[in-house]
Length: 143
Image 1 (cartoon, helix red, strand yellow):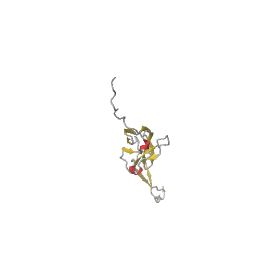
Image 2 (cartoon, one colour):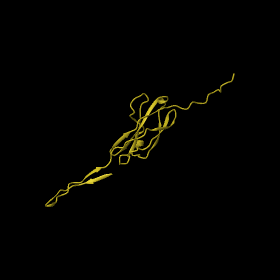
Image 3 (cartoon, one colour):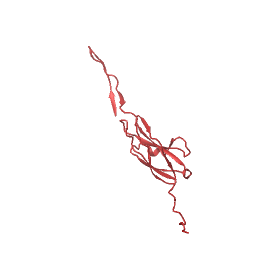
Image 4 (cartoon, helix red, strand yellow):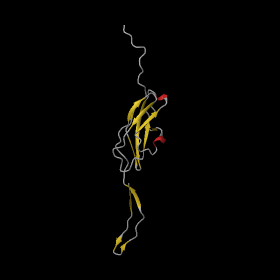
């Protein structure tokens, strides 16, 4: 929310001229965002869910950003499909498709929530891209 102000001085001779108007936003960056939750994992994709920060700072959330690492222990700073998240303040789930070279690697992901005053980062969540094991074949034999 924005508030507008202007001031004027008063003395024994009366009211002076008003100053130019200035506007201030009465909010702060968001805080207290929970870690993202991985709800599905496959060999080359995963689905991540998150919730809005518990404190949005007094201004609405304007967008989210999903970040990942490279699967080799680097910083969690690679944007995942950045244009998907532009101005999508109500996006709380996303399916991430990865190249097959990431299969079996440990991937860290985190969420960034933004408002007009700043942002908050979640802690990262670890996952490993892999399928559920297939059915054994042939069936075990009894000897």
